Picture 1 (cartoon, helix red, strand yellow):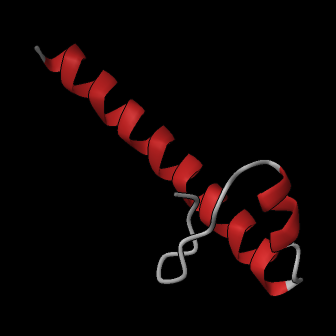
Picture 2: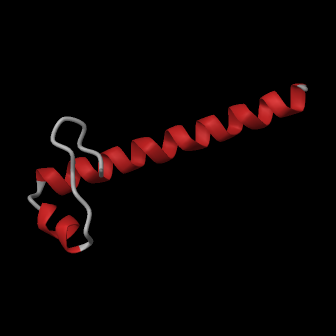
Length: 53
């Protein structure tokens, strides 16, 4: 049981890091006006969160 909790904790940390990296990248896309690149990839930024919808 304890090993499963540790694995869940590891996965949670990994997802948290990936989410922060994603948020940072989309912030930079918005900051430098590269949103048109996202539209070419058929992605769309949400205005309030700065994440891809």
